[in-house]
Image (tube, rainbow, N blue to C red; front, side, top):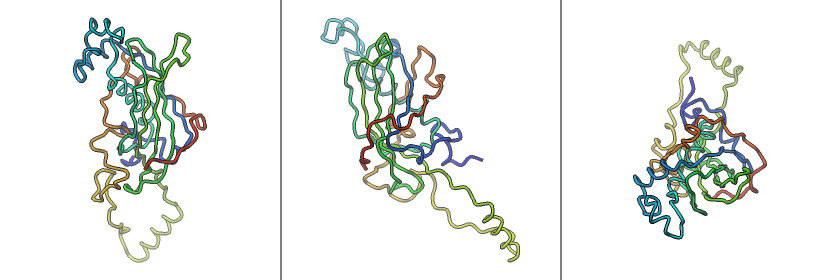
Length: 254
């Protein structure tokens, strides 16, 4: 049976753990195409400013047409992050983000390449059994030749990931069972529980790491949207993990 701390962010058995997310690692999160109808529907529901929802006003303005809500854009990032990394990693909650920047307008039909870079990692001081990973996410608009034209989004944030579970030593286990049998013990006594998954134990969080405040696993609580043109982002194969292709490691921010 897979224990909660060995499950991925989507509930499946995890294949990546804190120890695998080393500074310098780059994870390709795929490419999404911005669907105009979804972009406007999101804005009407959550961010109904005229340059997001009124094509006439937006067309007559310096924007030259409708532009996406920044929160729609970061939702596309979040969906790709879940589909291509958190679905494979033993992800817990997120203590928050340090930066979220919208660097250029996003429009219907844009093709956005997404990636995340591991900047730092250390065992968590607030959540035993977890490690804090500092990450930078970027979205780049692609040109007709599939070459990056412009960075449209950048975010720096942290996520909690479970340490790889320690496997019991078979020799030690056999020895323990033999000792218990000789002593007449029918069962091996276990020690007191040390607490449930992060976010549910009694200990207060380290102020430097913060509390997840209802955020999704590894994320910042943003709503999730998938790219409709090619179906949900989850239909794309997981992006490759490429160690050593990211920026130079930086010190963790917490």
